[in-house]
Image 1 (tube, one colour):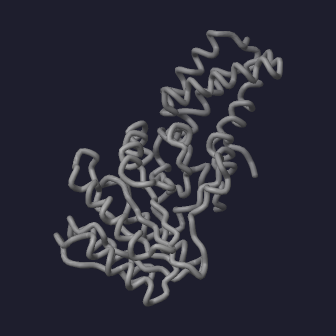
Image 2 (cartoon, rainbow, N blue to C red):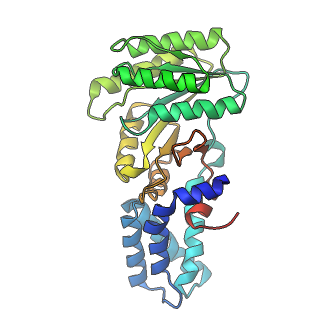
Length: 308
């Protein structure tokens, strides 16, 4: 199965909860009036696009109707696709992971427990190895022995070493050791796991700031990507998590996991619009190959069930 078809399949529930409802509102022979815009607004909000983004989208549609002198509601579907694509694309140059061959690259992976951080790291390592990068992992989540063990299992599965220490040890020390190892072994990419820092746990957030400082100090020339992992099934809660983490570290990209099997995939539009953080990776299944670079055009095609 090609990736676009896999993506279409993964977005089935979101399509049913979002696109099909929008299509119902924008049906043929329906007049474009204020009642239609209000109905559309309500549908977008219910589809987890978010209040602010939904209002903004509908306002843009009002403008396009006047500019293009549209009369029939069915014509608005194409306009909506265009606008969603614009939101998701953003600044194209920032949509790819910050990686450079011949230079040390660090990916600091953050996010709350249960969003799939460790699994994402394993799959990302696999993805990068296929692209001929030398990869090293660091088990910076020292608060749970299970997190260390899980990362070691992933390391064995994809064939990369994991720098680790005992449960309860200082995460900063693990990161320090990993930075030194990455330089001495000339690794291309160092991926660092972190604890599932809950936004109300001030001490854990401080720990994350400390880790970021150590990376800057030990690898001043490195490209540093701070990848926030969010769970699509949590809908609007994902946006509030992103806001919290952005207050602590300079989040440079988002990986949205568990897009398959959720009706709340519309949240990706709200995340990109409200936070202006690029979506860099998406997870659409359990398989090793189911973590992919995010491509806005492919996503919109899959969402609206279009052919390549």
